[in-house]
Amino acid sequence: MIVFATGSDSGPTPEQRFDRLVDLPPSSKLVYRTLDEDGPLTQRGIRQRALLPARTTRDALAKLKEADLVEERMYVPDARKRLYAPRPVVRPDEVDLSA
Image (tube, rainbow, N blue to C red; front, side):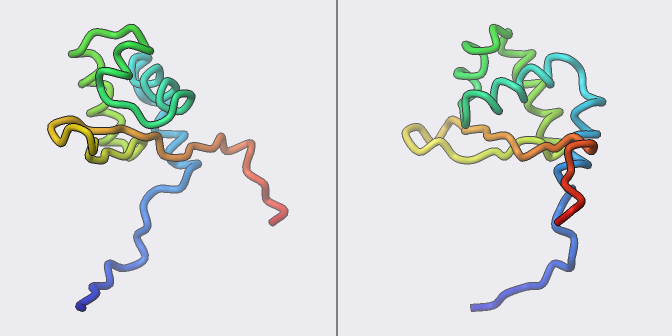
């Protein structure tokens, strides 16, 4: 087995993700909150819970993926669909500095 080192770039921290989320449009924030509350969902599940049109949901997910705020996985029951899960976000003032 060959393993490649990719360096120390492990992606943005939860605090950096929060800053990215703040800059996104309201529809993206609503989709993120829906995912955060209801767990991993397909696009259809997001649309049903957030009451958003399909195009708005797709656009919001694209912006969230670009900002590294959601993770996209294969939906096992139907490989044509994808499952979306939120990545952790932490407000900078909620960070525990005592650790």
